[in-house]
Amino acid sequence: MFKLHPGRCANSHFFRSHLPCRRTLFGLPDLSSLSPFVNADSNPEPQKYHERKILPYNRRQLYEVVANVESYPLFVPFCTGSRILHSSRGDRTKPTTMDAELSVGFLVYQESYVSKVTCKPYEFVQADASSSSPLFKTLTTLWQFQPVPATSPRHGGIPSNDATDEHASPSLVSLDLTYAFASPLHASISAAFFGQVSKLMVRAFEERCLAVYGPGRE
Image 1 (cartoon, one colour):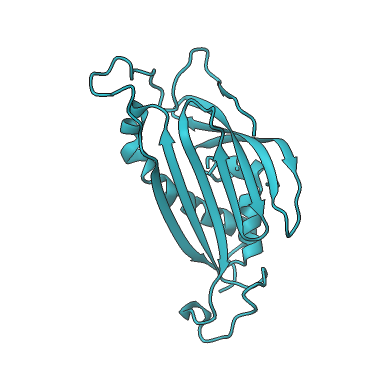
Image 2 (tube, helix red, strand yellow; image 1 turned 60 degrees about the vertical axis):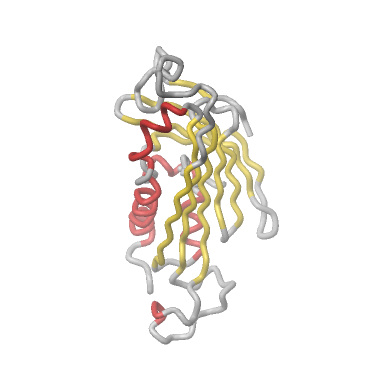
C-alpha cells in the first residue's frame, strides 16, 4: 500500500480475482446499479491520511524495509501476496522503478492489482495502483524518511551527524495514504474501516523494523 510488500523497489494494467465468481474486496457483489442511494454518475473524492513517527533507526534501515516489496505479506496489513513483474534498477541519482502485483485479502476474499513502485534511496518509496483497477479509482502510498534535526529533544543534547548521512539515527518516517474506490457503494461501506489503515500500517512497519533490526538506537 497496498501495497501500502519492498524486494527491491516496481505499469501493467490488469486486475484479477482468485474466486470462481467475481466479488469485491469486502466480499459483496457490486450492487451500485441496484441501490436507490447511490448515483452511478457520482465521483467519490479521494480520501487522504497522514501519519508520522520518529523511530530509533537510520534512514537506510527504514528505506530498505519498505523497498523490499516481496516482504510485504510478512507485515503489511491485509496484504496476502506480492511479486515483482518488472523492475528497472536505478542508483543514488535515479530512482528504481518496479511493476508489482499485490494481493489483498479480507475475510475469505482476495483480489490482486498492479502497482508502479518508485524507490529513491534513502528518501522515499511510492506505490501507485494501476488506473485500470476496477476496485480503486486511486490508491497511492508514499513513505518518506528524514533525519531528525540536531535540535530535537530526541537527541538528548548530543549533536547529530550530517543531515544527509543515511546512517544517522533516529529518523522521522511519514506515511501519506490517498485512495478512492471506483464504486461509490464500496466507498460508503469502507469509510469507517479504511480510516484506520494508515495507523495500522505505521504500527506494522514499526514492528517489522523491530523484528529485522532489534530495538534500534536513539
